[in-house]
Length: 263
Length: 368
Image (cartoon, rainbow over all chains, first blue to last red; front, side, top):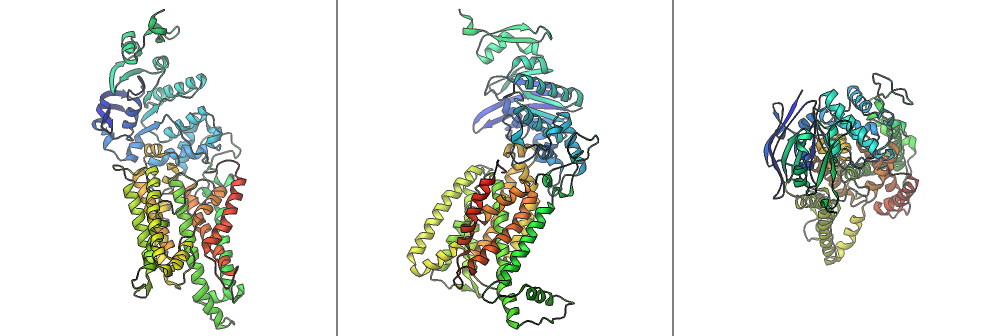
C-alpha cells in the first residue's frame, strides 16, 4: 500500500500565503480528516496536492514519486479529487461522466475500450449508482451527484483519494452513507484518503486520524481524542466548547457553549 | 434518439438495465444514423446546387459528366459542351468552396461553444470577424495595387487581419501563464470594438470602397474558380484533425476547468490548441467568403439535439451539416432574386434565425 507524505508544503494566492509549511503523512488504508475554521487552508491543501494550485515550496511524495514534478495526467493516474462544488454538465449521462474518470489512462486519440467501461462499471457498482447509468446529471439528487463524482474518481484507479467537504449540502442520511463509503474505500480498497470536514463529531467517528489546521498550518494531528481538546479547539475556532464522550463509540463529542458560558 | 448515444457495456455481472447489459457499442464514436443523415443532406444539397441555375442541368447529366471524368469511364456523355463548362468551371467550384466554408464555420462554432461552455458562442467570438473585416477593408480601400501575382489581396488581408486580431485577444487575455476564459471573452469584446470602429472609419474615408467592403462584410461567393478551394482545403483538414484529436478532452472540459485539470487535462494548452485550430479554419473560410453569420451558431445546436453532447461526434457531424446548410443557403441566395445575388449571410440569418427559434421552442430541457 502507498503512503502519502507532505513535506513542508507551501502555497500562496498572489502574495498572501495560504499554506505555510504543511508536513503530514497518510498511509494507505487510512482516512485522515482535515478540520479547522474557514480560511484555514484545508481546501487549498487539497488543491495543492492535486496540482490545481501551484506549490510555492515543499514536496508531495507518494511512495518514491514527488507528485509535484509529474505531468497532469501522470498525477491524475495516482490522485483523484472529489471537489466541494460539484458541477456536472446537464447533457451527459452518469455513465459518460464516470467514464471520464478514465481520461488520464487514455492517449489523446484513443476511445474508451471495453476494459475502461468495465472499470467505470465497477466504480458505479461500488457507489451503488449502476441503475443511474443512463440518467442525466440534472435528473440526480445531490446525494446521487456526489456518488457519481466519487465513482468517477474511483474510475481513475487512484491510490490517493482527496475529498473536499464530501458531506456539504447533504442530509444526515446521505452524510452518513457518504462517510461510510469513504471509510470502506480506505479500509477495504487500501486507498490513501484525505478529506476536509466541518463536522468535528463526524471527523471523530469516521476518520482514523484528524489534523487540525489554522492559518495555513497544522496545529495538531493525531487521534481525535488527542487533537480535540477544549483548549485547542477554543483557541483555533475562537469559541468555547465542552467535550463529552460518544455514548456508543467513546469518541469525543464536541458541544459549543452558548454566550461563551455566561448566563 | 437516446439510444444512439447510450454507452452500454457488457460487465461481468449483468446489471438490471433495460438492455440487459452495458455494452460498448461501435456507435459510441461514430453515430451511424446522424452520419448517414448528414451525408445524405450534403449529397442532396450539393446535387441541387449544381443542377439549379440560369441553365438547369438535369441530375442525370451531372452524374454522367462526373463519371466521364473518372478513369475507366469512356467520355461518351451525349450532352452539350456548355453543360460541362458550367458544371466544372462555375457551379462545382462554387459548391465546393461553399461546402468548405460551411464546414469550417460550423466545426469552429461547435468548438467555441464547448470551449467557452456557452451556447451563444460562435466562430467569431474572439476577434476573427472584426480582424478579418479590418484586413479586408484595408485591402479594399487603400490605394495599393489590389492584386498580387494575379491574386486578390482581399483574402490575404482578411486572413492576416483575423489571425493577428485573435493573437492580440489571446495575448491581452493572459494572466500569468493562464488564459482565463472570461478574460478572453472580455478581451474579444474590447479588441473587436476597436477593430470594428477602425473598419468603419476606413470605410467612410473611402466612399468607393464602402460598398465593396459592406458587401464583403455580409458574406458571399466571390468567384475565383478552383483556386480558393485548394487554398482553404488544407486549413480545414488540418484544423478538423486537430479538433477531433482533442474532442474527448473537450468533453471532459464540460465538467469545469478545475475538474478537467484534476482528471489530467492540460487545460491551458488545450485552450490554446482549440483556439488556434478553430481560428485557422475560420480565418481561411472568411478570407474568401466574408463574414457569413449564423452557420456556426445554428448548425452545432441542431446537431447537439440529434446526437447529444459528445464532441467526438459533434465536430465531424457539424462539419458535414455546416457544409450542407451553407450550400443550400448559397443556392437560395443566387436563385431567389436571380439574376441579382443576395449576400449569403442575409439568407443564413433569414432562414437560420427562425429555425433556431423553432429549435429553442422544441427544447424541453437544456441539451447543452
